[in-house]
Length: 91
Image (tube, rainbow, N blue to C red; front, side, top):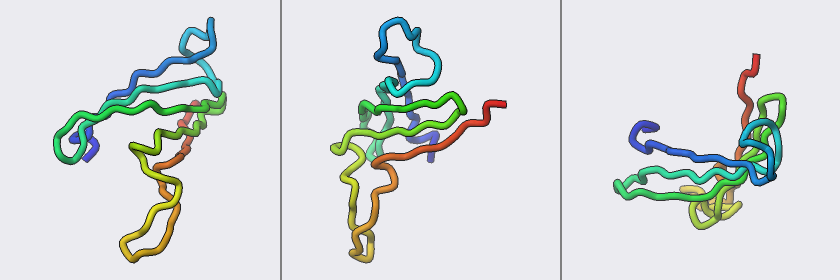
């Protein structure tokens, strides 16, 4: 469950003077969470954040796996967490 994973992000922009707010392709988030065995994990995710509330994020392959993975029936499929995006309601 999301509560069991307990994700904890800490995000910063890499552009000097950006003051860690606003849209940009220079966001880096260090995310900590608890895995299925109860062990604490962490990884660095890169984000592109647009002024319309939409974002695109990607994490390290050693954590999220490769772009293509094998399904339970043996078929090669795109890894849904390799890179993901979404939008927030900004109204």
